[in-house]
Amino acid sequence: MNKEKFLKELKSTLTRLPINDRQEILQDYEEYFTNGLLDGKSEEQIATSLGSPKNIGKELSATYHLEKAKTTVTTGNIMRAMWALIGLGFFNLIIVLGPFIAILAVIIAGWVAGIGFIAAPLLVLLNIIIYPSTFEYFDLFSSVALCGLGFFIAIGMLFATKSLMNGFVCYMKFNMKLVKGGLKHAEH
Image 1 (cartoon, helix red, strand yellow):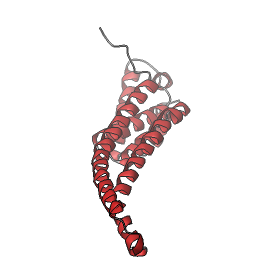
Image 2: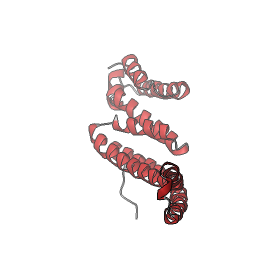
Image 3: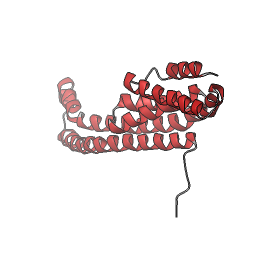
Image 4: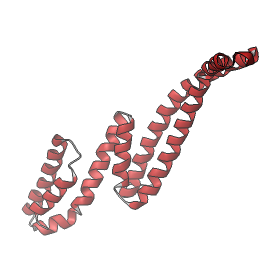
């Protein structure tokens, strides 16, 4: 594969990155080719030593989206980072998507429970309006207690949601290093 074909394939895999980052990456790889040619290597040797442009593009895209998800933790950034990681290989489909679904289920369940408890007094009032003869003070007081518990759950879910999303981003970074083979044994 020559320089032109390599850079063309690399450019096609970087379409989801911002233009400035894309241009910078392509300039870096052009420099690799320039330096390699100065060292007496052929374009084919340089391309072979760099690896597959598609894999390079996938790794760079995943790295970019992970960094963006870490700096700005939003659902959209995390989803983009997750899909970029899954794109690195089938293995990641299982390793990344499974924990993401589990975390998402916990977050949704917590928010539903908190909101449901907060809405308990409204449901008691609705019951009083529809069936006035069934009113009992116990229902009213227990629904107010559940409402208070719901506020505590909602406050806890604010912190839990942020912590779980940050933890998931760290997990995806760890997974990316694992896929790239970048994990080293701890130095003594």
